[in-house]
Length: 418
Image (cartoon, rainbow, N blue to C red; front, side):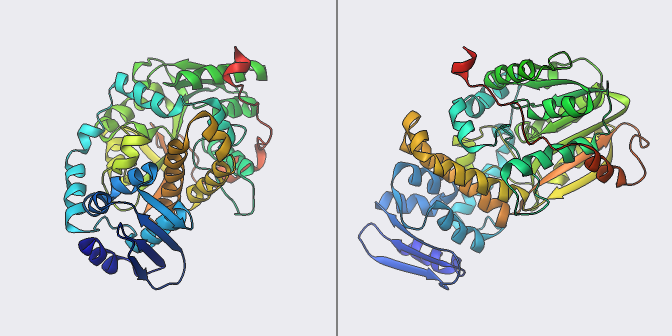
């Protein structure tokens, strides 16, 4: 504990952290102002792992019950650490070695050919329907919402998100739209419903594919919106508009050139595309090893400096970039609160370890967006410099014209479909 104690004394200046070590000794750190947390480390092996590889061990020890939160919750603990660490990954010399090794080997971790991509998607998105119903909105929007103000509901914020994206696509009846990574179909259904556009959504998740098409049938618009189980790299058609929401994080840095070249190949000469994804403001890095192992294998949130060169090499024109900063932190706060409200129910069809894992995932993600330099970018691209109007006024005009989708077609669960 001596080395860990020394490191925490140096690190924790804001907030208050109390640590009960394996021998029962109490150690206190920080100013005492702001977030506070008391944790207990069960054994000496855990203390050593927390020192040498904290980015992986904090999550694993919490899941396994080797790191016990005695006061506050997992978010309070992470808030204390994240407020002190900020954008830095420099926690200590031993953990820095592990962090450097991850950056060097990140292209191996992010190698995502089609078969591996499908398995990675299934790992997360093919979990039980009931899980997603209990913490997402009724439309199952599993990406950053859009908060014009913080006093609105999650349902309203997700409806604003869909409208905001649709407004940037310059939609009109009959245009052919491709939705890459279409989720449970909410974005495609909204676009087709309010603009009468012809929408093709693609996903690698068998569950999302099933649910999306069932929703299109229930909405009575399956004649102009359909969902296919296919990798974007296998498509060979032309579209007027391309949208991708929350999928680019699964592409992998090795495949950025191929991704944007494919968008360029699929987009008509006067077409417009929009990519909405998580990014990082602190420059290129590597995915947190705990998130990589347990939540999103193969995933990575890139810096704009990694994305824009690939767009340029593909021959596409960047016509607009918007950065959403605290929007995802607020989204995750809603999800975390809903998840924990239904925790007993979720535990009944998974187990307590799963609940701890997801509590850690949602809390850590929220803290990262508040203090760790993560954000969401929306990049609009085109093949022609004249594809969009001269000013951004058209976005606000379209938002005033397009209705909000506050009563989406519900996603049927598996049992109902069968």
